Length: 123
Image (cartoon, rainbow, N blue to C red):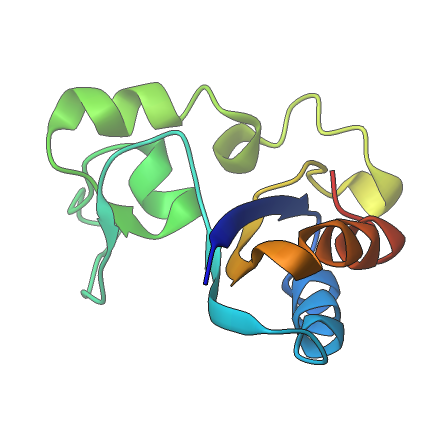
């Protein structure tokens, strides 16, 4: 059985999930929904106090991410997600396609799968 990979970018996790729900009528071998960002580091749960200076950067405060090094944290502050400048979306929300639906489908179902994700709003 031949397989093909499908990568579809969405604005929201709900859009991706609806597309995945529709894809399940086809022969989906594996599928996953992820959010991605241009900055390194993992989300971390930690107690941080901006009052006593216990934070590494604006990115730490606004993105709630613990960066691998101070430079990455400082660079993240320039991004729209951290600063809020230039978002320009409705209600001043950050816009963009940062949700990735990755699906491995049977080659025979690939074109149907592409049409499903397009109708669901994928890029």
